[in-house]
Length: 381
Image (cartoon, rainbow, N blue to C red; front, top):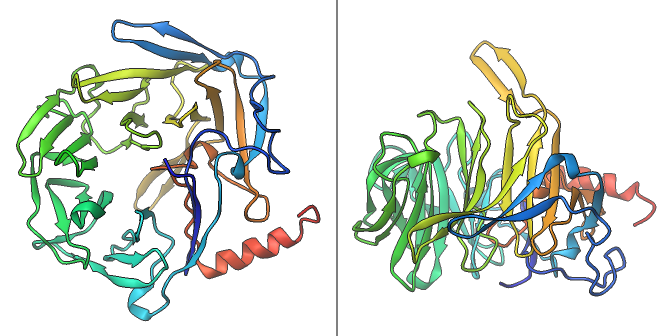
């Protein structure tokens, strides 16, 4: 996996790839140092029928580590996005590949926009609507440069939308199942797509591998992972580790104890690899998991904040705590991270810092200006 840090502007984005620890910068631990070496052991490996799972206890977390982004990233790149009228985007999600940048739709829905890696606008990708090649809410996206394709996965659809690298709609790929939210992972070399969908009880499968024509090669039924058939659960597939497909569920209503899994495609099996035992078991806190090459990271929140308004009720997480645990030693601590490439500003959600090997921050110019003014007040820079 390449180790890169990228930042795009136009907006402006910071992107960095995760890998084993980089050290030697002035703010990082010394060369070869394990920054968790002096922390307590908070997890032990437990043998299961299919392998080992690292099982950790919140009660054992006592230390806090704060380290710079450069400990996991090698470089930063600033890319100013094209500012032509047709190229403007909001502070949306970003998908990157070796040669392209894909800016996601915002709200209200707008068309995805494709740029090259220098930030030059290429085209819109499809359009917002209900017709062929059109979409509204998209849950996942992938750029497949080897096949010159872009894939968009709508929130609820039995088809994966396909576009060429000029944004023109091509024939969609049938999925065989109407997916209530789904993450996709296309493998150009094998000509396959792996799909992770919400494990609603009425679905025949929630994880499967298929070819590009829609033929299912193998699949897994929801089984014990069934969730209430609503949209109060998120699918987490961060893909930060080469050749590993990680999968977990962020269950909000109701919450429950669960695990982080790896999908073993060769045996068509979900293998649990990490779990975390909370002090509070009734109810289980809102929580999420993520895998990095040498660590498991996660978060959990205090009681949700409930807000009632004229359109209904919304819930947001209470105070959120992040942690990091070494795969090798089981040592761990609460986690804080700051962006030493960019004014030493705190990273708000460090356990979610990396996705698909990158740290990405997409910034509107006004936000960038505010961050610069804040950073200039720090006399330690």
